[in-house]
Image (cartoon, rainbow, N blue to C red; front, side):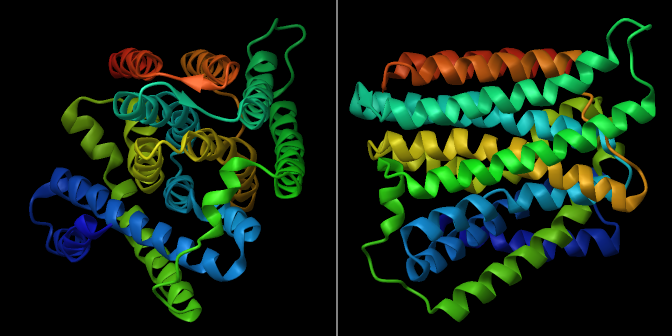
Length: 350
């Protein structure tokens, strides 16, 4: 965490670039994106400190709820600015990135350091099954929207279908959290926090609030530059949404997942990687659907065919990885290879 603190200087730098118009949109995009990294790290640290006071189970729930706060804020800001396709690409990209990039990098680094690593196959299998269920649910609107014309619902019907699925997804999330809190699992143990807290609870809560506010401002700056930067760099909004935004928004969880895998705590590493994807699919997505209704610009859950193929492939990989309860560095390299291939494919799309 200490190495991230100097990067906080990027926050005032980004604000300076915004109000002086120095450096152009590209400089502002890079500065605001990098500024989100230490802010996400501070939010994660404050969340962990607060979890010491609340106990292991509530602490795990607190981590799960706030773990994707940065990306949720980014996507809400993008939704307010009408960048619906970027938001949907970010949803798909977060799930894909957590399963292929974060999990792949964690397994690779952990395997190179520790050799064959073991984890609880039952818990991992439950998470992977939930992930497969979530991906199938997110695929339903696109299947109906792209189906035979005589059976295809109207645009209003697709909107109502998406709203209904959002309700089902949030109910599934609540049931999943309830089941997880009642189950004894190895991945819950690291949240027990045997070490003494380094800050008082009010300080931790204040730090959480301050970092969240700062993330809101940096997210506003980042999203405002997406379209001009995409044009200057020759990138499609799909590529930025599915590859860059999730990478920045989830950076704190990425770092932690790799660290604990290096420490041979694969249950926690898998819990972070797959669990974060589950949070996006079952919690963040319904929130965005409902928020879009409040804005008067409903967002449907109709993903394009490229996003669907990548989502289904990532969910399948998650199930396969979880079957035997063990991992090695080659599996991590395979996940990263697939992520790289998808990245190249999305680069040339649009």
